[in-house]
Length: 253
Length: 350
Image (tube, rainbow over all chains, first blue to last red; front, side, top):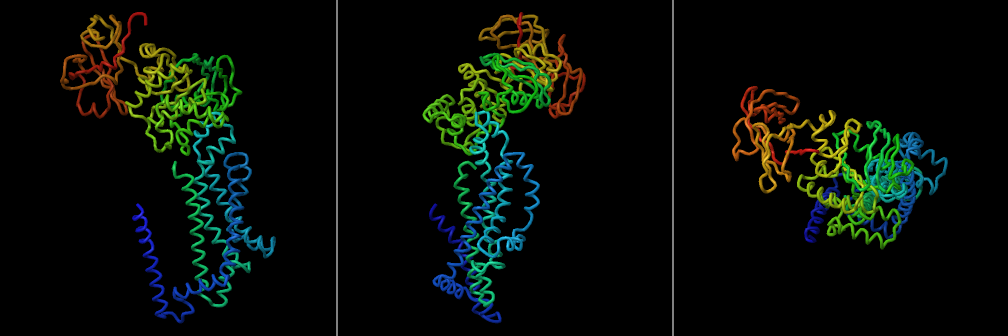
């Protein structure tokens, strides 16, 4: 079993190595007008090392990470909470659904000009954007998850003597978890996509801002370093929630 | 006292239903799909609103919510909680009612033993077979010591042998626990096997209540439509053989029936329990008879034939494709086999 796992990992790494090799060779062949526009992989790694040691990457990464963590947790917890209320209570659903379906389709970045005027250029702005971007999808996934729970499970719990709140916490929410996690997985990656855009447009710190600075200095190696960091972050956030989902539901699904 | 009384219950298809289920009785509610059987159970359980009154003993329970009615309910799909293991499924009702931890443990242990599923206690529902799920669901329904047990076609998804075995076991358990039970099914033989009393429900009405024999031999018209009118033969001659068998002659039909009785008045068999063949069937010449096909009545999937043998006329029902494969016409000679286990008997005074 273990040997098989190692081999499997090796196979996955081979295409990546080949890709990096081709990249390096093409860049070294100097087919482009200058190394400026297409630096080889080794230069990118060197720059990555330099940025890390100097603390520039760490500082910007940290400010992006904190924004994502705060915005995403606030947005998803609120979304979860409102979603549970809407999924469970018909009156709440009827009252809130029209408003939410009106606001939901607005792309999160569309809020940027409005939020800039409301909150100014500061830490609240990116957090608010991420909040909006994670709140709605998680709300919808939670509502769907709760509504999709087979009515008979609720009947069974009721006959076994469970009061409504107990049914919600012991039967309905656990059974809605797969749906809720679909939302969390998707939106944890989405938060990173959105924050970069916000930082590029409006905020002077963070990975997005670093990329914009690199652009004005024509430092393509730095841009690529940032892109790699972003790719890894999106992936690891999504994988974290996939892992959590598996941990919570693999025994019974 | 845990008798159940239904007074003028109306809901969905059910119209003005009056029915009484006695204390500790096992009553079978028999009826075709869509007759309102599940609706009636949901009314008794308090899961849906309804018009009319439900009494447990002499107490009206219309104002009592479902979680306070102390009912055990087995749904058709069983609905074991997929996210809980077997022990936690059984303990669920006790946990939500905040019973002491020790008591829960003892009770679950006991139920696992009664239902013979101790080895399954840490499995999840997806890891159980159909019969095992059945046992777990029943254990869960019994955990809260309910006053009344409702079973909604619980054996539907099981194979014949498992369901037969579980039914027998359940019948014994029901007697032992002395719990008032309503068992819903659409299968007459299942009903007959389980119940002392059957209530036939059709199109939202209670059409007939009585013992299995009463319902089989004296069905009302609506019940006839559903179960099918049996062929009833008057016996001219009886001769008790050994081994609990009895030889009976009805006109020129000679039958061997398993029965403890010495004298039999009438024999009945449903049209679908008679086999029809266009050639002489092999095997001993018992419970089979030669006759003449006099009438063919075709419907969408079945064919109903009338066969005359001497003074008797028998109706036989068989699937269309089997009938077509025999190429029969009116006036042809046919052989009939009357399955001994499907023959019902009636003696004087029943």
